Length: 245
Image (tube, rainbow, N blue to C red; front, side):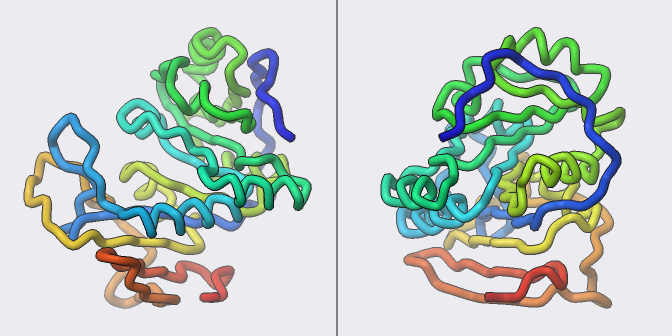
């Protein structure tokens, strides 16, 4: 079983040599919003789909969210199902995948559930100028890794691969999703659509404006469409690494 580090370690990532399989997961309203403009978190999924997400998480080596998601949503990022945790242990894995977050400024709350819930290893990839601040702030709660200035996502993926991460699940938020998509660093997208509209441009969307590898002249391939209760899952194959299975 994995254990949390006893002291915050600061390392410098190597030059990119490869990357894990990257699966993006997101739920939106019909009009493409991932939340509303209120302080209360908007529930877009349902119990059946949350169970599916739990199973997808259990098949990954690490789960990544941005620092904004850690601050706003306070996610636990652990496997909820006892059966799935036992199955991972039986395969020689930790009960839950490694937790990963990215931060440019080091604005993280050490009391967040990302750091305090579960025994999974916790990795914080940090832009160089904020490394010292983040190291002092977290004080042994995670491994802080210098990921360059500005923080480079391909370098983060290379370091995760060097740590044995073969399959990475990226759960947001919208800025992080846009960064991975815009850089062509995603292999698969799980997009769940909830049956309602938000209709408020103050609310965050799945991704904002940007240049993406998929456009009218290069369409993403649909690998699967599935109704799950009152939501719909669309799986997009974004690279040749996705076999559509």
